[in-house]
Image (tube, rainbow, N blue to C red; front, side, top):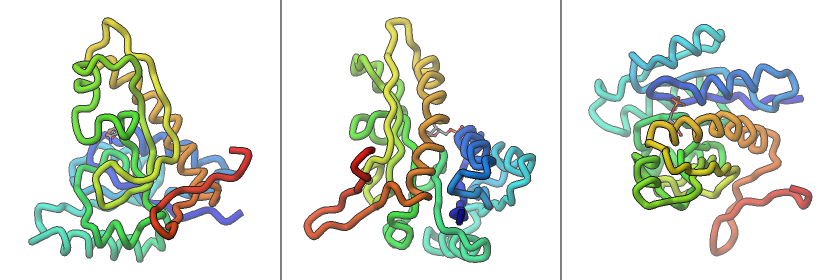
Amino acid sequence: MIRKRTSIFISGRGSNMSALIEAARRPDFPAEIVLALSNRPDAAGLATAKNYGVATAAVDHKIYAGREEFERSLQILLDIHRIELICLAGFKRILSPSFVERWRGRMINIHPSLLPEFRGLDTHRRALEAGAKIHGCTVHFVEPELDAGPIIVQQAVPVLAEDTPESLAARVLEKEHEIYPQALALVASGRAKFERARQDRRMTFPQQF
Ligand code: GRF
């Protein structure tokens, strides 16, 4: 089996990254995690990746004149490691439309809400304030518009009366760790594909899915 060479982009603790690395340790998993890349040199997840024996790189966005220069460095690293797929996992930089276009269909993201509900930040507090009865997480293909690409997998969780943003976040995070590996497996194996239709873009799944 050919395993897709995958890079995970992080900015922080990297718990989703760990879930992906763990899943990809199985020899029958269709992706191989070959590079953890952070825009923050102090991201805790970099040490975690090293402990797993995954190559790491920090590309500090602050030392670059602009987004284009920063992304040029990212792209060089992706080329060196012959990366075929990118998983954004708590990566806190907006990527330019040209970078997104280049990786379209080959870059996925996890978002802590049931998209299209609660795009953007602070999703758990906003869900509680809105009185949502269910909340959850989504893995989707990345499009230039923020948190807007075609959805690959979603998982809902109940919102409980006594929930705080923290307790709700913890319940959602458990599900994030389940669905991100599932979504990566679907994309890496070609079972979920980003397709451009004539008028719109959509994703296809095989009949039985
Ligand atoms: C997760 O909640 C993810 O959905 C969001 O940022 C958080 C990252 O957590 N995009 P971690 O770094 O994977 O632990």
